[in-house]
Structure formats: structure tokens, C-alpha cells
Length: 298
Image 1 (cartoon, rainbow, N blue to C red):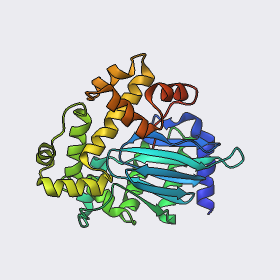
Image 2: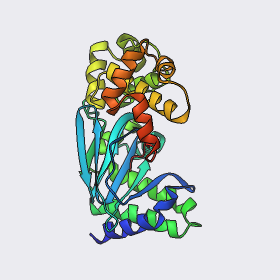
Image 3: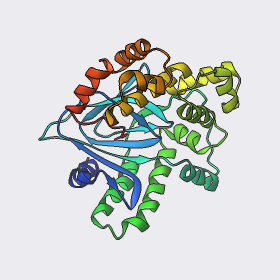
Image 4: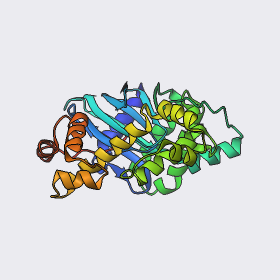
């Protein structure tokens, strides 16, 4: 498709900047080789692949998406991802846009388009990008070459992109982000609580109360959205936080394990190895010899 090819060309030209100051939610990515799976904490976002392919894993769910497809992430989730198709001749090219609940809610209020609340909708999904979505995305990226126009026209095109997403296959996910009383928003409140209190003992009854749901309903909907139980989710948050601390400082593994909520160094090392494929010391040596892991949706 001509529009997708031009989108890829613009990403390739401007990807060195990574993000765009005039439109903070826009991210660009270019990679000329496949990557190893890395962990990252993803916030709600829309990501479009212009060239190459990528794989994203959440809990036991794996999604592969390629050029001409887009990914929607509707809730804060810890994800493994890797670029699976890229080369110096045909690099992986993608762009992403953060999904702001306030912007989505404004569209829903103005149009009275609340759709229906599908409680069991997963927290991420892939679809083919139709021409009516590619068009505003292309016009937004063209503004990168007219930076004086970007602060004024960028938000208008962001709004058009959100509208196209709302009217598309993943509209239910978008609506749930914008509706304060949706099941997704209720689960999001519990997710935020876990992120703030990841080092504390977790009680499902307390989380259910935060979400305003019964324990049985909360557990069912939490797993449907995140592909994990609340305890599994907390474990991933703890281990990702531990990995970030180890990478950023000279603390020993036992101290970091205690700091993120583990009572036993052996349990911490065992679960760290299970998630990241190597014990903390060996994992740090590997990471420091490579690029540092990132959490970008593109």
C-alpha cells in the first residue's frame, strides 16, 4: 500500500529522535535486526507496524503482528516482546501513540458512542490497519517535516486517529479505556494499586474492593484482561522492578530481592531465573554487554 510505504519512509527518516517533543505521546522505532525477547511495562497505546514483524507475549498469550497491522494495548501490563523480522536492507519500522483516557472519554461524550462493555475483552489485540486509519497516521507523520505545524495540527490528527480506532475492530478496547465505569477501568484501578504496593503482601479481597467488584468476579475479569492471576501479575512487577534496580546500581541480588518483597534470596533467584532465563548475576552481565531493555509499544 502506498500510504504504508510512505509511513515507513517517514519513520525511517525520523526514528533517530525516538519521541517527538511537540507530541509527547508519539514514538518511532527503527531496528535493523531481530532482537532477543525483552521485558517492558507497557501503558495503553496504539502501535502500527510499517515494515517487518514483531511478537508480544503477555502471560500465556502470544501475538504476532506484521507490516500493515496494528496492536492496541488497553491497560498497564508487563510484556515480553521481540522484533522477529528485520534486516539492514528492510529494517523493522513502527510508530506508536499513547492512548489517553481523557482524550477518548471526550470523544465518547461528544458522540454519545459508548458501545457496549465487553467485560471479558483481553488487554491487547491485533487488527489489520484499514485505509481510513492509515490516512490520518500518514498526515500526522508528515508533520514531522513541518515542525511549526505539529503543535497545532498534531492534536487534531491524534483525535482523528482515536476516532478511527473507536470505529474499528478494536473499538471496544478503546471505549473501555475512556469509560470510567467499565470493567477495564475497574481492573485498571487494581493494577495501579499493585504497581504502587508491589512489595506488600497481596490479598485478592482487598484488590477486589479497590476495583469495586466481588472477589470471584474480580479474579475472573483480571485474568481475562491480563492473562495472569493477580499474584502472577504482582510477581512480574516485582521481578521487573528488581531487574531495573540491579541494572541501575551495584546492589547485590539478595538486598534487591528483599526490597521488592521477597523473604528468601533462594526463592527470588529461582523465580528471577524462571522469568528471565538466567540468575540475577548472569543476567546482569548479559544485559550490560547488550542494549538495555526497553518498554516501548512500537
